[in-house]
Amino acid sequence: MLFPLYINYLYLFKIKEITLNISFFITLIVVLLIIVVFVLLAYKFFIDRIIKEKNAQHEAEVLHQKRLVLENIKAQEEERKRIAVMIHDDIGNRLNILSLWLNNLDTKGDELIKKNISGQMSSLIDSARSISHSLYPVNLESVGLVLYIEELINNLANRVNISLTVSSKFEKKNIFIEVQVYRIIQEFTTNVLKHSEATRIWIYIKDNQKNLSVIISDNGQSFEYEAVKKGMGIKNIESRIKSMNALHKWKNVLNKGSRLIIKIPCNDESANQNSAN
Image (tube, rainbow, N blue to C red; front, side, top):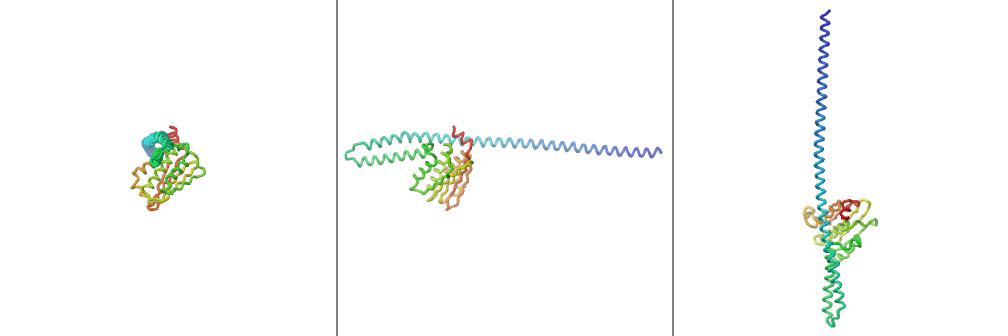
């Protein structure tokens, strides 16, 4: 009787021992899994932190570069404005006074000389005004963007046919935005006249609550963007677009014309700050 009981007890003991071993191994596996998961989470957190820091560093560098571009454009515009105002207000006014004196001068028979001098004086006044406007749109703030573009169109009327369409919802923007838009249109038309052999240029300005859209196109020879993107004309246009935090797209078809589409955010803080400065 004792032997079977002993065997039974031994059997139960072995089963219990095996059960304990299995429980131990299961516990060990669970602990190891927890450790592995913890290590993976820690590694992921570490990698995410590195990526986040690199992204933050990249964004800081981009912002720094953008500020440099803004400051560079601002400095250029201020210098252009200073020279333009000097030409417009000082030299231009002096030439006008000289012209008045000349007209009131009694030449007594020297009408031909007076006429020649008067013609040269008028030419100098026009040149001074043209140089002043090319350097900086001196009267843009008081006149407004649309009228200033119309003046540009009138000045180029004998060279190319330019059509301007402005939406009825257009509202005056801060002076920084208006100067950049005018400069872009001026640069585009200059490039067209120099290189494109176009006979028509179309300018569309559409305003809404979110964006100011400017579309400029021509019917000239167009160009390969990759071939000319490093040229000063394209660089000047794109740097001004960048300074406004605007989006842009070139659509060029060889021998059929070029199109530049610009979308300028209406409530851009950096542009407003730059204008305020």
